[in-house]
Image (cartoon, rainbow, N blue to C red):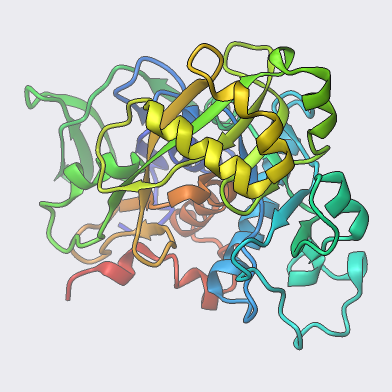
Length: 397
């Protein structure tokens, strides 16, 4: 079967940020999409992250990851503007990057002719510039602190974006549907439950269930995508618990570099809060909230924003700090695996996984890439970049 052949029906396994992005991108192209998820509702996995950043990666040589994340951030913020409420679900705030390790340097030569805000968004200087003295001071950092300013960046609440994408006409979500196996039968893909009964069936299947994708796919011929789990914990608290002195030290925009700090964003309970994290723990398949990770995030804040970290030390007490932990899915080169897994041996089967810690910046773009391939469209990235995301790059020969 060739892409876009009738019927245009697809199954998506995984109703998180990645799966909902695929479902949205297919539905707006006229596809009928059924999304299956083992959870009882939105945000049970990594998409339940209370708040995170859409901000580009920067490198001196403007490498592949940098170029792809710029495209991803543009796609995410455009989707957020179309579907979400500014100020409560997302905000285009700009993001200051404290260049702690000295690695995040802008390319020095190839865009010397571009100047500030006149540069196009697909160029390094269109999204990111050296931070000004005023921006560094506003963050509470000492003069001369090495920092970058991502002007076209901001915070997003992933659960709200996931929910909005799943509510698109043409998308049907079936919760509490644990898929234990997939099979190709009579030119269609079949999702099976633990008892071997058919849960759903369609000519096309996109697996977008993060690290859980591995259990479904690893026994299939040609599959060799090295998906790995990455546990992360965010620490947060309520703005109402901060003193006036602490409020005065809060930066007016998010700051990242060694983790990220965001404030004034609604917490899962509703009231506005502050957030710091996330931790990185590889090869961990469970995601409990741990006291030691709150302490690790306290050290993160002290490194990222020293004056604020000192002022807020008391907010990390067990009676005040709250936590969220989840599993992300990563690949060795930090680039997702998207699209057909093996067109010859596994026709009609696609993947959208491996976003790592950049799911907010990459999931929407990866959903568009997957849908463009299935719908026989030009991809939303130049071919030279899109090939670096192709799931088939891992196909066994």
